[in-house]
Image (cartoon, rainbow, N blue to C red):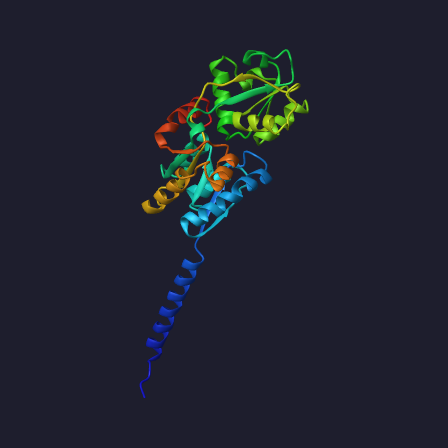
Length: 288
């Protein structure tokens, strides 16, 4: 009778275990993505749900939306490859690129993000210009927000208004919808936020525009994008980019996803587009 030596038996068992584990890992492969928490958790989950199903069909694997607690967590998650893709604002992309040693790769952005804007809102009829904010309580969104803090701050500085010296108080609401709520409730005299969130609130009649109004709209700048880590295989990057670029409002699925993403369509983007954001961040002392 042929007998295995104990050594050969152990090696054979080990090999089978490795193969079984590898097969299980392949079967359990999950594509994870996150998004900066610039809106309420329920709204982010609502926007992510149809995108998860769409990406599963296009990538041929399980897809999960993994929420994070704050902007910094989204940066760390991508830099440490804990997630495969992130929805960043321009500033968080810059932060992720610095944090990862230049390993953040923006794939696509909404067409609207090529000329994005922020708005300043108030309920005070005496506030008509950025200079009128001197001596007032003003709210930004998150400190790491492009459209809710960095770019509004940059344009304030251009107008010779220094928030840290000229405002009575600087507040950070944490999210664009929270900024609207703070202004509407009179907790602050004015606030700065993402124009698309403002327009969505107006369209959905979630804000009383007879009381809350826009008094300043910023010049355009590049903003949001979908970013992956440079270590992702090229074929996977191409597959993800194509999935977004193929979204079309002519199909029910495409229409649903694009409307939730507040996009007319997605277009290719590149890291060079965000050099202006990086320069503004360094100028404002927000990026070391």
